Length: 250
Image (cartoon, rainbow, N blue to C red; front, side, top):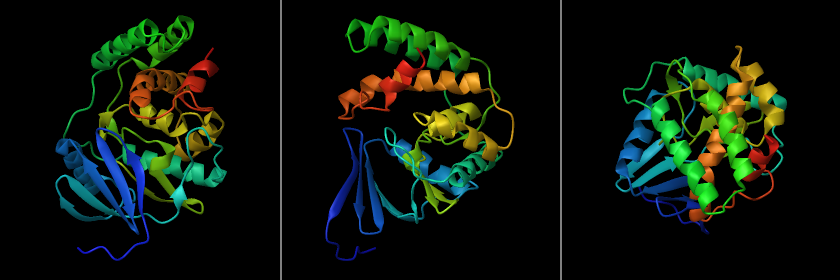
């Protein structure tokens, strides 16, 4: 496929592991780990909700068609999407969770707990965060470390990965972390930093959920992400982002 002439190439995301470029109406994803791209392509084919069209793949590049609409929001910024759009996102997540499981496994609880303990130790030892903040959120995170019934999870359901067109979900991006996992993890990542939208998402999801476990995943995800974000050029200390999420649990 030949790309039409364009005025610019936009760097959407760029760090040591992967780069995503936008060229006109095409997204080019360059990933250092082709196993992640394998997962992404297979997961999009299996998912019962809208996903980007795969235009072509020539490792290490995956070309995807742009989705209509716009992202549900951005971490650290107020979302201008309607309550109905957030509820539609919740309904789409429920459809995904009701779908047949993918063939590959997800992370085990003991693996997550071990990584969490290691990350908390590093955050304190390297003076990244105050010990009290880490200790409190490690206690909150404990509620997420329990047995769960695996479902088909997206695995990285940030609001920038969910596109809406009006009040409808037009597509979901970035499936490289898809696996068998905890349903409440997806709901937590979708609402991370946007706690005020949790009610809309749960209403669309359409079943009772344990809100304490969702809050626990907020703490756990933030604790695990902060050091990686800082090392890859992102700012977890920005207003409304991961460090503020941890502070809100105090």
